[in-house]
Image 1 (cartoon, helix red, strand yellow):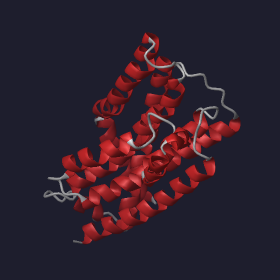
Image 2 (tube, one colour; image 1 turned 135 degrees about the vertical axis):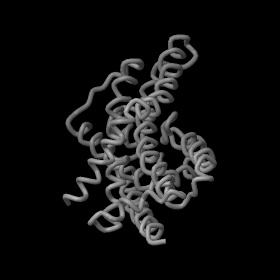
Image 3 (cartoon, helix red, strand yellow; image 1 turned 180 degrees about the horizontal axis):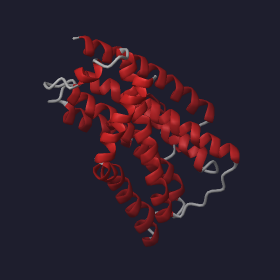
Image 4 (cartoon, one colour; image 1 turned 60 degrees about the vertical axis):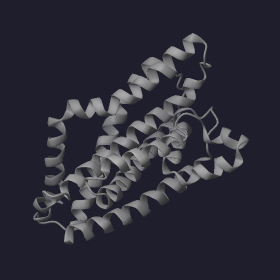
Length: 254
């Protein structure tokens, strides 16, 4: 455990040195989208003001999940690249799986930091009215942790499968469909008007993160049943953790 904490402390110090670039990467895109669709367009009358209530959970979900994914996948691609920097970590008195788990925990922490930064800034622009109960707050904490864990584990799968030369292409091909079909900008429940599409997007793990934040932050709006959200988040998290750690160990032993 001491070695695990030491590795985590080292990686957190690296993140702290690059805090400005980290915050810019996390904040710029969500806040630009929030400003246009949550502040400018409602005041122009182009979209209804109630749209911001549906949009805020999606913006938060995107910020946290993509932050945790990138926090794990991008460094791993570099570590397993030609420089083989991962070998320095593998020399520590800890199992290979332990090193992989530390990477996932680091991704979760970075996602939580992203949420802490983005949520109040987005709320200031959108002015969504929160009437949260203790149960809603509990939902929010659990959803935030599960979503961060899921996409940190998913980032490990991506980071251990993709070569450095392909990472930009993979992010372009993978992230765009995931974001647009991830129910960030519209609630899953309202897709009943297109039944085939409503069921097709269920293969996208981002759907459950965004819908989970709707369950917690805007329970008065249409959203996916909580049991579906929790079942999918836990199931995807376990699967990607198993697959990611297995591939991480395989790459480390190459």
